[in-house]
Length: 598
Image (cartoon, rainbow, N blue to C red; front, side, top):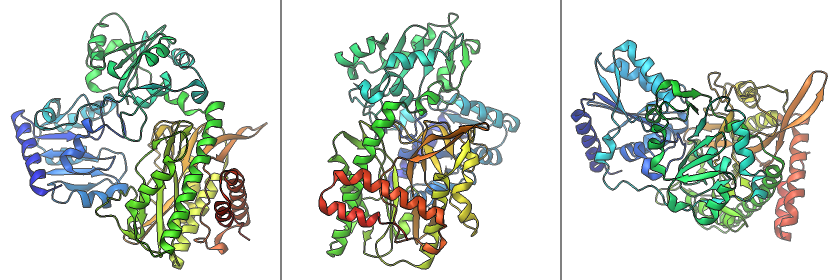
């Protein structure tokens, strides 16, 4: 952002802090629903700093302004923070509040550190207070600071809600709500704050957040009925009638706080400490709250038969779109025409949009040519995107939203001859990908236990990558979801979640050489039962994504026979699934891309 605009924002922010008697202020990335992707109305950290990555925390004192983020965003943050007045503070361990230690080391005892209780989860607020107390620091909730200085703040979205047909959802909302009620125990109500959990439970979809087909709302589930707090203007007669079949009544979004206050002394309310804000928790006495964790995420993560069948349809559509993009890019480069990273992303969106049932992209495409591919969450802009030439490698990470499911795929393409170093790194990544894809493991195995399978061949050469290996994926919902994760971080709650039959997750090892190239291979995989016997149930992964994995980047001598066999079998399936949907020229391209390795 222009330096004078950024400096003005920071100056006004500090003036507001001083007026409230604050020595520091913490600005997180999330909204009141703890979302990863947030509506523009709540993009406070981005507005203040200019950093547009999805993960990061800003901290402002009277003499310093810092942005803490992890290695996925280091290069992006260095570029976007230029002239902002904010310095990049590199997290040593992803997803940890290292800024708390910084504050404790730079502020004297008695300092007041401000935050917005409407944005901090209860879990975050408690952890901050526990950390600050021994240092004599106070966490002070000052909720209106940003409201006073953000001129032209975007309003909350007004997009309509819609029902997801039962043949797509696979289960009526009433059954889902009853399944949640069975876990509520003796509490009277359960409060759902996560937008994707609400959408899943009610079989509702919307357009309130870019890439995430959700509706900004809250859901309170009672023992016999439920209450949906949402902008009534988003709910037409069809949606309201559909909800009434499940005894769900509609209330204005802003009335949740008042509704909860009326429960004082009357009822107990269950909640998830990772999703409930400190503000909402403060509305009722502590004894009326019951910490139950997320009752929805474990149910949502297990794909029912209809969801599994529909996902296969979505994957076929996505594979066709990717194939047409790859052919177009090959032709464009062969003709000597100029094309940029941004244009590739736009063209891919157009090919996806031509597929029936397409609802939008599941995230902004990452199209990284050469050194830009080493920026893990790179976002090409029209005015600065690199021109792509018929040489080097291109990393393409993208996904689509279809009525039948959500996709997320990464491929690395050779656009010309590549060095032995690139082939070595690519083959190590591929070996790691295949190692995890072929894994057979006992029921109860966690993502932390599985992660090494994807890294072992990089580790053997003293190499690594700085992101997790796999995340859960929603069903025509958020491209990132829990409760599971494949990660090397032993402290990650998601990493400690057993991978269960029916869960869908990504498998995406990579390697990144800053300034030179980036490599990543990603498929979505369904956890399936492999065998059952006297030693229990053993699970494995079944790839759902349907698109060839580049073999012209492979050092064939590095692959073991079983790895070659797996790759050939996968490519045979890709051809079998996609060929009937293609014309003759497209089939020929696919046949070459899927030809067996000797």
